[in-house]
Length: 343
Ligand SMILES: *Cc1c(COP(=O)(O)O)cnc(C)c1O
Image 1 (cartoon, rainbow, N blue to C red):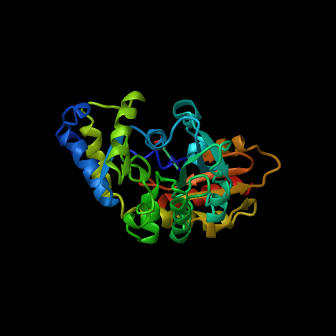
Image 2 (cartoon, protein in one colour; image 1 turned 90 degrees about the horizontal axis):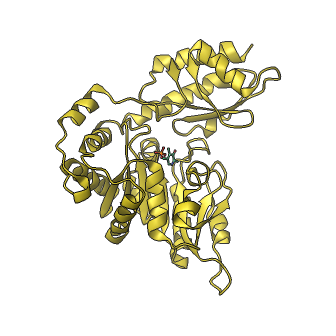
Image 3 (cartoon, rainbow, N blue to C red; image 1 turned 180 degrees about the vertical axis):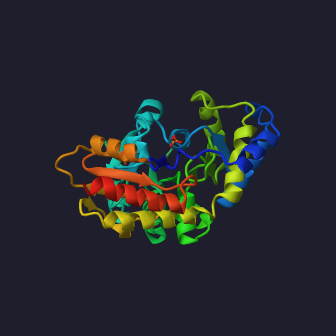
C-alpha cells in the first residue's frame, strides 16, 4: 500500500529504533532525563533561542504557546484554515479562555495589512489582541511556505503594537529544506515556535515548544503538567527526535521532489484540477471532477488499487509525500491515479 494520507504515518527506521533502545533516561518531571534535556538544548540552539520544552504533540505545543502568552478574555489572531482553528478541538477557547480572530489568507498566507486590520484598538470596550499565530508551512494551504518578507512585515506591525508572535512550525523544516534558509532566519521573528518531530522528520512521537524567553518556557512547563503532558522516562522518545533532527532534515528535499512529480502526473489526468506551481513542499492538494463517484467512492477505488489519500471536503483531496514513500512508488501511484481517475 502506498500511504499518502499524511506524513504522520511514517514509522521509525532501524537507525532510529537503535538510538531509542540505547537512550539514557531519567525522570523528566524532575528535569532529570538527560536525553530529553539534550533534545531541548539541541532544538533551542537550532532555532537560535534560549529554551525548549519537549511535549507529546504539536497540538499541545501550540496550546502551551497560547496559554503561556495570553490571559482568558483576550484574542489571538490566526489564519482561518490553520491547524489551531481546524484541528485542535477548540482548545484555545476551552483551555486558555481566549477568542480566536480568523483572517482568511491566500493558500494560508496572511498579508501584513490583513493582520494589522485584525488588531483591536486599545480602548475600554475592545477585546485586547494578545498573540499573532502564523503557520509555516501551511498545511491546509497546501504546504505553502511563508515568504520571509511577509513575516518580516507582520513582525514590524506586531512590534509596533507590542504583540508577541507564535509560529506553528509543525513543518518548519520543510520550509527550511525547500528554501535552504537556516531555521534561525524564520525563528528570529517569533517569541515562540512549535516544531513536530512526528511529521516528515519521521519520529514516532513528539513536538517541541521553543522560545527566546525562559519565563515563557517555565510557564509552559507548569501548563504542560496541567494538560497531562508531563512524561517520565521520555528520553526513549527524545532519542528518536534527536536522530530525526540529525538525519532526516536534509532528505525532506526528496519528499518535495516526489510531491512535484506527483503533481505533474496528476495534471495529465483530464478529471483532475491542480495548480502544480502551488506545490511548494510535500503536500499535494487537487480536485477531481467526477459526476458518477463521490469523494468517498474515489478514495475507496484508489485504496482498492493500492493508494491511500484523504478527501478533505468538497471535491478536494490531499496527498502527502514522506520518508516511507520511494520515487518508484510515486510512479506507481501516478499510474494508479491515472487508471482509477480517468475512468
Ligand atoms: C500536525 C500538525 C500539528 C500538530 O499535530 P499533532 O497531531 O497534535 O502532533 C500542528 N500544526 C500543524 C500545521 C500540523 O500539520
